[in-house]
Length: 87
Image (tube, rainbow, N blue to C red; front, top):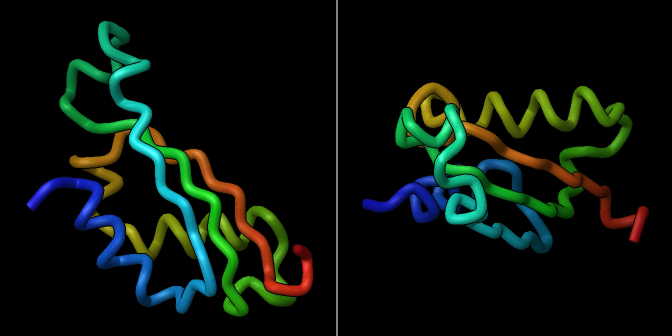
């Protein structure tokens, strides 16, 4: 199973109303982090689970949801997280 599919499966736990996930790995070929094989992804997500959470807490929640993927399959994850009311 590819990394993008694994990420999408994990995101279900955050009950997103919507999200976009972009694989930016090709833009980072040749840099030191890319050598490990981990991908670079950009996530924009809207979820009620982010209500009353700071930006840092929202990011931590996403990282926790990704679990061990952050150690192997994902080298970098850029996150923009909103509540439904913030749109």
